[in-house]
Amino acid sequence: MKVAITGKGGVGKTTVAASLAHCWRDMGYRVIAVDADPDANLAGTLGYRGPDITPLSGLKELIEERVGGGQGWGGFLKMNPRVDDIPDRFGIDVDGIRILVMGTIDRGRKGCACPENVLLREVLNHLILSQHERVIVDMEAGIEHLGRGTAEGVDAMLVVVEPGWASLQTAKRTASLATDLGIKRIDAIGNKVTGDDALAFIRSHLGAISLLGALPFDAGVEEDARSGRIGVDRAFYREMARIADALKEPEHRDTSKNLV
Ligand SMILES: Nc1ncnc2c1ncn2[C@@H]1O[C@H](COP(=O)(O)OP(=O)(O)OP(=O)(O)O)[C@@H](O)[C@H]1O
Ligand SMILES: [Mg+2]
Image 1 (tube, rainbow, N blue to C red):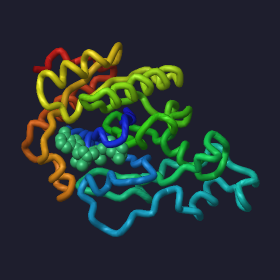
Image 2 (image 1 turned 90 degrees about the vertical axis):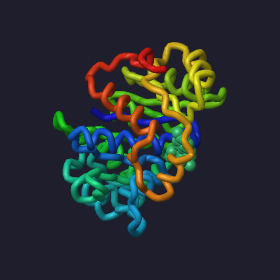
Image 3 (image 1 turned 90 degrees about the horizontal axis):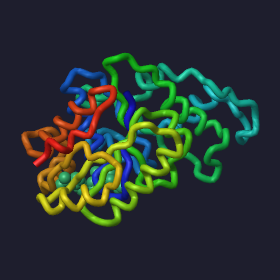
């Protein structure tokens, strides 16, 4: 299963992606955590404190070897390059989670066949997963970048929302676009939920999008991100574990009725 985590800026996408990665790892899955945000910080949130990671988009020799394109990108491109070895060769392992940093996809040529895009798209779409593997893609904020490349690559899209108008508007726009793109499963995860009123607000503004769970606001989560130490005993991670378990099912349903 491959899931993409989307939502408005700052709602907690990276926090959710990192803690979902932890939960699935603890459940025995091999987890590949893909940072698809050009302003990458998933590895740091997962506790990585080493030197800067070169993103895949910056591995020019690899791109040339696999996709070709030579001078500029006007040359001949191999559209189905081999990518199955990329997570092992170019990912880094942090506490048993494989992290892949995608880097910047050239917006100006979005959708066109420039070599970086071909490689990144293929990596997302053609990671062949065994039953015990899970891919989590931490996306850039907003919806502008959501395109066919993402849609073909994921089984489900999880939209993170917080109890405020703006993130719920973004969620509805994201869901509508994702549906147009053919993504079959779109669910919401509430984050920074401060109580019953906040949860009720989220529910009443989600429309038809089902709510998988509600993660509480907890200043300790921010401290965990700073120290790179996630998964300690907090209500936040317990709720995340429940969501991860619900997502385990091939056809997960709305489990939010079990909340509160
Ligand atoms: N449940 C929570 N309680 C308290 N703080 C939280 C919670 N979830 C996330 N945060 C904090 O909110 C901030 C934004 O979180 P995060 O970076 O995960 O958001 P994002 O959606 O990935 O942001 P961006 O759009 O910049 O990628 C971080 O400082 C994070 O620690
Ligand atoms: Mg983020």
